[in-house]
Length: 402
Length: 86
Image (cartoon, rainbow over all chains, first blue to last red; front, side, top):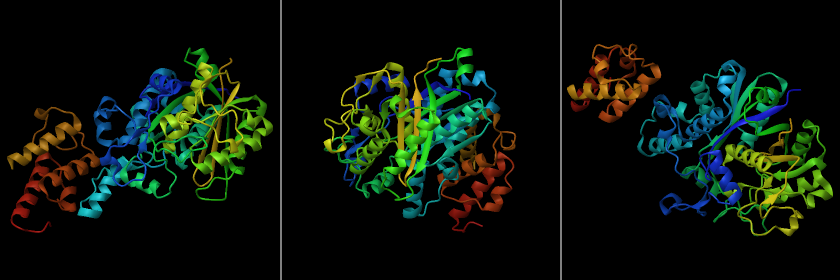
């Protein structure tokens, strides 16, 4: 079986528009969650969002891309170019040997919402580019066109697990040899008034900022951005002298088959078990869980129950952290940002704190929740993503040991 | 007419990143590498600018820059005379 390495990474996030900025913010606990301006907030019951800052699409987009790329696709183009630059992937493989599999849940809302608002309120015709700009697969297409990548390319939409499903699919394709390399991750730009207002109605958004696993947690924080990676055979990456950032060793998926919003422990537990089985690993090897950890009462309780189910007594002391208190919950891109955080934990031998949380909910019986950075070189780490509708995806990563 | 011609040439120049001098009224849109999506997108922008709508069948028959200018001009004239779009 082909071992699969991550050889390039790129990101546009609320905590940095490069992986180096992301790394610094991650370990310094510098959150990207900010209060909205009054004009943005309007009548919303929450004020905190994790919006990308200092991103000027004009710095990244070519002339044809400027006409076509909506904010979400622009994030993907920028993150993809960073990852491809770092890995040198395009010089090492033919376009036909590379797959692109990205996660995107909300599509191009920053184009679609204003167009529909004008249509419904003024009868104004939507621009002819509204459809190609706002389709959820636009980011995948843009990267394919820019880099001449002609292998399998598609977009996965499984809400908050989209990016994790995409990375897992790309990992399996490279591992099986069906493609030589892949570009994968997620992108999302959903912070439009309509989207925020719809989430407001679910009463799961924190007024002031998420506090994963804390006793006083009061909801999630919505975010945006992109994180993309290049994957290829570890052997080939080493032979060509490419950067080797970490190894993906397992991927597990499951469906709760129960409720359209409320997660059930059996699904997340099943996905973690499958990821470990896929990695041919023992649960006792896992030293770090980058949790889905949204900061909602239900998610964190259910995730804790799933961790107890999979890891037994060891769950009480296992290092568990959520980085959503930094980059927010970026929907279909979130799993990719958390994969990036997990990758840096492996690279640095430091487990990042769950920024935002000041305490741990004793009822969860998770004494290992990371309230501060912890120096520890994990042998194996899991990155959890659980979507509305009960669709679960878990990735297993190891530090590189050639 | 001249203003509309200027607007069309500017729209093509900025859309395709080509010098204005290269764009003549008798240049075919194909020779300027405007594909069908470019055409509908650019026409839409010009229609919005002038508050008019080129009838669908006329849009399909546009071959040159001059054709586009004429269709927009005709729509503008029609609007000024209170005619509904054909």
